Structure formats: C-alpha cells, structure tokens
Length: 283
Image (cartoon, rainbow, N blue to C red; front, side):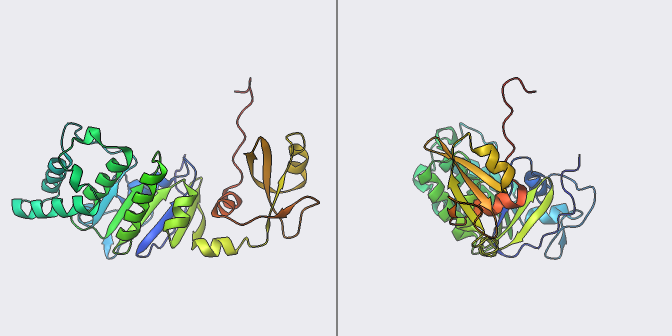
C-alpha cells in the first residue's frame, strides 16, 4: 500500500499545520523529512539542501520531536540535555553548559532541571522534547502529535512555546487535533489516505464554507432519513441527541439553522465524515 501519493507542498517560515486522521500518512511524511525513512520517488529540499540525498546536511539544520521519544528515566533533564548536546557535536563544555541552561530556561524547566525525567508530567516531557529539538538552532523544527494526552493547562503552555519558536524558523506541526492548527498555524495542509486534500491558510479554508454549513438537532430515529437526503459532514451527540452538520448552498429543510463554521467542518468536508463503528456481530 502506498503511504503518500503525489504530495506537493511548499512550506514557508512560521507555523505550518499538517492535519489528518490517524493513518493519513502524516508520520510517514514527517519521517521522510527527518531523514528517518527513504522515499521511493519524488524530491524534497530545505533551501538548497536535497533532503533525500544530503541527509547529514539536513540533520545539521533539523530539530525533531517525534510522537514518542525515549530518554533515560533516571537521568536529570540537565544531564540528559548535556549528553544530547555532545551527540549533536558540541564538544566544548562551557558552550554546552551555556546552551543547556538557556534552553531549559526557555522551556520553563530550569527549576526542575535536576529532577529525574521519570518524574516529569506529560507537558514537562514535551517541553523537554522541544529543548532537545532546539539544540543546534535548527532552521526546521518538526513536531509530531505534541499535545496528545496533555491537560488544558499543559496544552496552553505548550502552544505558547511553539508560537514563540515559530517566529524564528519553519515549524511543521503534525496533528489530528483541529484546534491546534486553528490556534497556532498561518498555513496548513489536510492529508487523507496519503493525498493532499487542502493546502492554504485556515482563514481561506473557513471562508470557502461561509454560509454553507447548517446544523440541526435530531432524534436517533430521524438520523437515517437525514443521511439519505442531505450531505452530512459530521454528527455529534449533545445531551444524548445527535446534532448534524450539513453542507448545502441553501437551507436544507425546516429546522436547520446556520452554523458557525469551524475548521472541523473544513476537515470533514475534505476527508468525508468518520466511518461508523461496526455494530455487534460485524467483523
């Protein structure tokens, strides 16, 4: 099965959101750019550097925070960051000390610098992940599903950190969380089944659906008739009742009201509504 098909993107400096459901091909795309996976065909460049053939040069310009990254749990953040700096080629002890202290202060982990990484919360681990990704002052930073599992407070702190970093370099944010892209990114792409379904700004994507999204609260018994009659792009249970969002140029039928268009509406119009879960007894 081909993971990516005819993906063509130009990614400018700043925050760029790569949005898609699980299995869409986002991680494959990220791994290729991070020189961790070979592409069967195509081209990719970072400035004048060929990403597919000049991997060592790319790695000098790259910071990467994968969805899951390993650390020594009984090692402090300070010691681990110093070790990773050595691996990045920073041999001078004084330079490493200055760098690690500056990075830990930037990601707000200075007060916990001597704590073992095993004692870090999810948000603290992600902030440490950003610190290690910034070693060497990379031109490109790739972060893969960074806010999955974070509580609202940790998510907000992480958003603020990413937004600040995105002012200085290219940051590719790969996620399936629509709100992350809306809040952080000035440019975005939607990938589904290995194909680019949209590329542009979130604002332009929202404008393309202005006045065309309608919603209605229905009973579960009424749902099949609406599915047969309208183009339902999403269904959400609210207080036990399905609320459907329909894409139509004019009001679909009685009872529908204009909905405030969200990036989630854009997402579902580009990829289609989620497939229903199989019922009991189905394979």
